[in-house]
Image 1 (cartoon, helix red, strand yellow):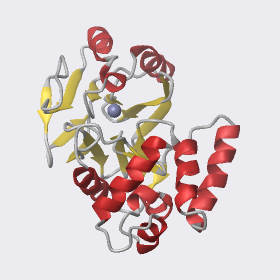
Image 2: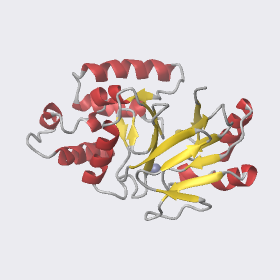
Image 3: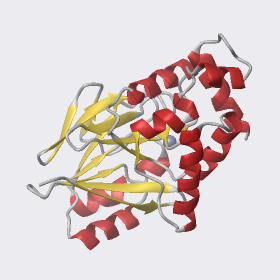
Amino acid sequence: MAAEIRLFPCLSDNFGYLIHDPMTKATASIDAPEAGPIVKALQREGWTLTDILVTHHHEDHVGGIAELKAKYNCRVIAPHDKGAEIHQVDERVKEGDTVKVGNLTARVLETPGHTLDHISYMFDHEHALFCADTLFSIGCGRVFEGTYPMMWDSLLKLRALPNNTRVYCGHEYTASNVKFALGIEPNNPALKARAEEVAQLRAANKPTVPTLIRDEKEANVFLRADVPTVAAALGMTGKSPSDVFGELRERKNKG
Ligand SMILES: [Zn+2]
């Protein structure tokens, strides 16, 4: 039986995610923005929370842990705490570790930049990537703790995943990201198609995720810092991809 994934809104623009193994009934929440919507989603499905897989220390990703742990006594998996302490952690994981959710297996990818501790969880068999605030659809996270080359390397790591990987990111920022990206690549056909799709989804109040790595490679300007036409659009022909990436990120910060 295939894994089941549910997504639902949390806080103002975070996504809550549950991944469920029908064989063993194990259920993991990816991060814990707030307990209420996660408990509701579990009750709707008749599932019990067994694990929380934490991506990074920001409050809008860990704020619900204490309440969920008190209610379900679930296991909490988290990265190292070089950035800031995450409380009530049962297991720390690093690059290359695997995490079992019942019979499902996630591979841990270190994707620092947004924070130093940021990790992503890749469920290879399910073709499902949970990358929180590293890669967004048509965007990427702000670089708060790391450097631009560090974040660019993290994005390259995610870009190298198989084309059919579904990307489950941490926030619904796609419409704003599309607007910015069109300013850089107004004639990118993949981006224009995505812009139309996103407008329709948002008008229907539907989420714009998951998306596919294949589509992000074609339409997400932050994954295209090594494409010569993108460097040229910024007046940075011949500059390194991480410099071009840094310029994109700074323009988006201001925009
Ligand atoms: Zn964050």
